[in-house]
View 1 (cartoon, rainbow, N blue to C red):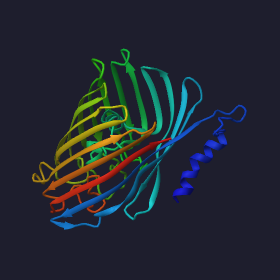
View 2: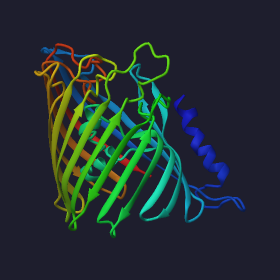
View 3: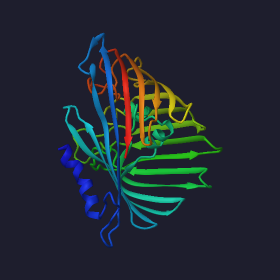
Length: 359
């Protein structure tokens, strides 16, 4: 399944005329084809109430395998296709469309995309953080947001890039589930860069998360809402940032009870030579402030990264996560613990080598 699915974008590129020599068929545009791989070799020690889980052990993972096809038809029209390969709960490889859209760029101040495209917050946040291959950013790790969805997307830059904006009207169930519902959700972000290196951003989300369906046996009772904020400095080899989110009814759209959650992430990194950098991050979140006020998630990582050649990053990293009052469906706990609020105290430690390769 994996090999067959990945062959699809490559075959499309070949038909359109892409090749290693850059030779195209007469009169046919030539797309660019690339990709990115996230891989790791680590040891995991995961415990629930002091007992080891099935996720513990030593091994190799390929967390992401993107194939990227870009096509620019002219100064206005372009298209993009991105496949995303991940492991599912059965330890098989699933291949999804991460991006598949047509774009019209009318000016620096306005472009529009139709199809499956990146959402305003998570990919932007990843670009500021700089170490996505090591860990998802805050709301992505805690499953209070996702990186892409199907819908209509607009954005642009104003005042020579001092301001930028993004707005998406999307199906709401995420890029792995392209189903429609009664209405579409909205996510937006506004970014302000007052000085070189300084980034200030606010954003938000509102909608039913794709669960408001006609003839559904579980009708929706709440609207999920999220507010995001970020302040950061990126420049001279230094990254410093703090991110905050607050969410209402994110896991309770179809439930009678209402709930709230919030969290903060602080991160820093420094390139002390062109080849070497150090980095660290600390997250804390309250995942169910009304229904399970004792449920708290704390996470940190520290690492040393090397950039031996262009487009290759390798990092030695230690991660630790502790969940009090339950196991949340975070990026680290999700595989072994599907329940969002099971009555378990969880601890997660992981150490090893993480890498990303772009081509």
